[in-house]
Length: 249
Image 1 (cartoon, rainbow, N blue to C red):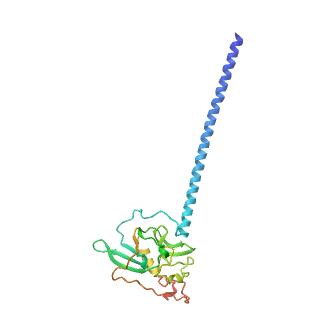
Image 2 (tube, rainbow, N blue to C red):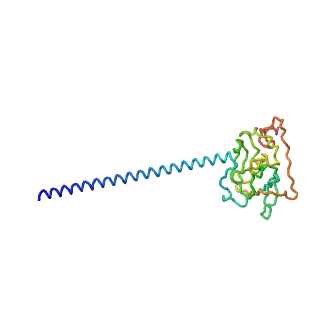
Image 3 (cartoon, helix red, strand yellow):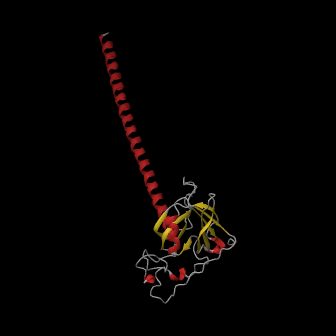
């Protein structure tokens, strides 16, 4: 009888030890699983952040160097509908017209008439857009730069005739002499004097309507003087108001 009781006690003690070991194992395993889950979450977040940063950087590179890639439209931004000016780009004429509000609150007062260069082979899209970002200097397709850029839509901007570098004396003068004809990859090139007026006076959200058609009655296309390719000043836009502009002296 005593042996039987002793045997039962041993069995009970053994089972208790088993239960204790099992309990400790479950507790330890649960902590380990939680720790792994936390680490995995951190890794996932880290990967997402890295991917986000990488995507952001790639978009910035594309913004600087490519006109053909697509970025998000900016026309949904909450800008005022009553901006002081309305810009029309008559694509097939290579002309930009700027209208101001009349006494009835309509854009009928023609205040500016510019001759420009739009995109070759209809590279400039037609449609109605609103301006967004502005850049004093902007890297452009082909490793060149533009002054006083204003974004119209996607990678289409108003900007100067290209410069070989971010220096006002490095103008591509042969391209300047193409103003009045389609010459760009899609952006709208302008003289500095004309472009800077838009940059300074047309705020974000200004409507830009691009279309093909005839010039309005009474409006004539401006003819600008060409740059003398043999002039030592040929690297400057003749209309640049910078005091260092040698054309001004």
